[in-house]
Image (tube, rainbow, N blue to C red):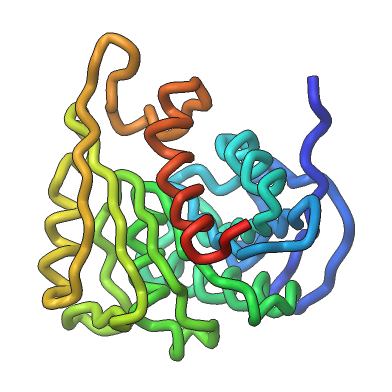
Length: 236
């Protein structure tokens, strides 16, 4: 069994230490785990977890895949507890993303905001509110089974024209279904968004939790589209 990925934990106060990612549920919102690329970093992916995950445990194999492709990953822990409010989670995401990126100092590399479920909605908000968050404007947004999340204001999300938006939805997803992607498309219009429906077959059923698998089918469905975005923005 491979040992856990080494990570740099970043607190709101910018205190840092070398450690493996902690699974403790008591880690404060606004903390980020930073996973450095194995070689020279080509790009940075901010990977925003789904509601209730709160640790990198379910994403470690995907993160390892990215770091082996020389992609640096910032994993913000935006949710302190299951009772965290929308405003608290939004504040935790802002702090975690901002401090994680500041620690890296890779502003000259393409930035991709990616997320799963609630985190996918936050990724769209990050692109629309980059200046308010104090982060570079992401070059791309990649959302898996997105849940629509409002930003600091209740109006439409205005995504910069230079940012591409790609979202995946599952035909057997009974948690968010197509509703989240449809709400995001409506909110960011007239900005274009590419929405792809994953259709279940004998190999893989695309229910909500299928995105957390690491089977060959899941890698093809979820990892490969993000790989293609990275390769487009930062060719090898």
